Length: 366
Image (cartoon, one colour):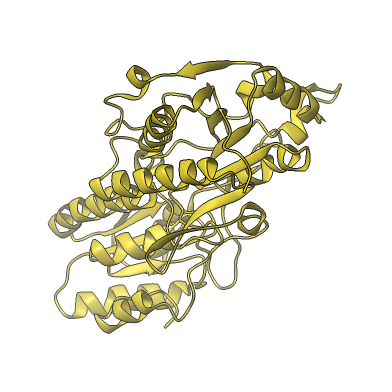
C-alpha cells in the first residue's frame, strides 16, 4: 500500500447528469476531513487543457446534494489525446494530442491523483494520465447505465423516473384522442432507460436497440388493442432502436466530438409508419435533455454519495487506477481499463423483459 495523496483533482467529464454534485460533495467533504486538499477542474478535461482549476472548500460543496448538473461544469468534446484545435482549409477539424500540456498543468498544481467522474469516454480520456504515472480513480456516471463492469451508474434512476412520469402523462392524452403516442427516450445503443421506464410507465410497446422491431408486429399490436376496445397505444422507443430491415436513425454527426454519432428521430419514424400503415392518428414526443436535468431522485443521491465515498476510500488507501462499481448490489472496484471498449447492453434473457412480456407488453418482435 502506498501513502495517501495529499492533494487531488476532481473533474466531471462527458454529458451532465443528475447526481454529479452529490459525488463532488462526498469526495470533497471526506477528503478535507482527512487532510486531503481537493482541486476542482472546470469543464472536465477542458479545465486541464485551458488551466482552469480552483480549490474546493466546505462552503463550495454545502447544499449541493439536491442540485442538478455540476458546479464544476462539464464538456464532452475535450479528449486530451485528440483535441480539436482548429479547422483546415476545407473546414474539417484539426486534432492534436495535448495530453503533455494537461500533465504539466496537473504537475504544476501538485495533483497526486485525479478523481474522474464520467462514462466510458471519460475513462478512456484518463488513460494518458494513467500511462504517465498519475493515478486516476473513476466514478461511473451516465443516464444510459451502459458502463461495463458496473450494474448501476448514478443518473440512470433519475432519467428513468423522468421518462416514467412522461409516459404516465401521455397515457391520458392518448386515451382522450384515441391516438398512438410514441415517446423517445435516451440511451444510445443500450435500452435500459426504455426498458425500465417502459415497464414502470405501462407502455404497450417497448422498442429496444437490442431487439430489432418489425413495424408489422407493432401495427398488429395496435390493431389487437383497438379490437378489444382500447382506443390508444403508448410506445416507448429507445433512441437507438431500429427496424429489422433498417438501421439506427442518426440525427447529426459532430466530427469534433469523441462520440460523433448523435442518434434521434426513431419516434417520428415510428409515428409516421403507424399513420401510413393504419387508420390511427399518431403523435411523437422526444424527451431529450429533460431526462438529464433537474434534481436527482433520492435513490440517485444515495448511489452518488456511496460512489463518491468509495472513490475517496480508494484514494486514502493509495489504490491506483481503479473505478468504483456496483456488482450484485454491493460496492466494489475494478481496474479502470475494464470499463472501456464496450457497452453494457440489455441481455435478451433479462428477467425484466420476461416480466414485461408476461403482462402482454410487446417488443415489436412478435
